[in-house]
Length: 276
Image 1 (spheres, rainbow, N blue to C red):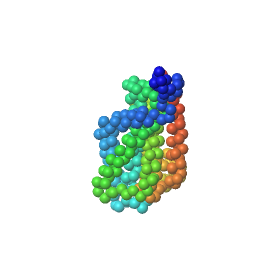
Image 2: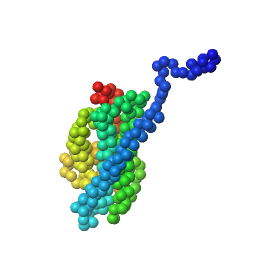
Image 3: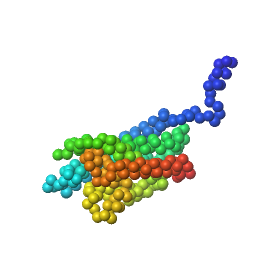
Image 4: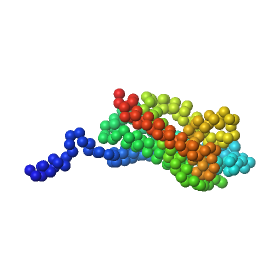
């Protein structure tokens, strides 16, 4: 009888949560699911984007880098390399979360992540962490390959800037990918966001040119592009100089992540387009 009373006292009361704070095991499990999902096809999700980025470097170096051309006091390929690295990182971070949610909705497997005892914050954190991981793996692959490029050995001058803008950039695109995955009903919808929003903003963000050389109107438009702050801040980590105010870019990205992260959290919490 005494043992029965002791076991009854150790049991939680009805309605008392068994996991009162953070479900670390569930969070880690979903994160590993996301990592294993893209890593099973790493040739497509990691190495192919790295090769594509190197092709950009080859084309623009050959076309515009002749005659010892310098930009911001650096050889053109040294100026170009950091922007290409972070561009590949953020594009793949977006692809990771948008495809994961959309595949789950189309195949009907989204219920597998909605039924377990995982909170909305843990669910969102797992998706974003998976996107950041894929982005940094692509970035590491490109960075390593660039060391084999003739006359190009990227030098890290400000590690904090590379880490901060790399994390903030991949987080921002990971959150945008979550929003796209929730909104999209078919793959054409996600492709439209990629083709008409993500890629144009990436290409028109100062990756291949200096913003200060543009006419005043286009400089203003460029400073309204959040991708500019991602690329400019990340490039600052390699070159030690920037095309815009680094602190302003850091604050803009922090604000956007908080704003869009809050929106994604709310949409996941109410089950918009995934629970009906």
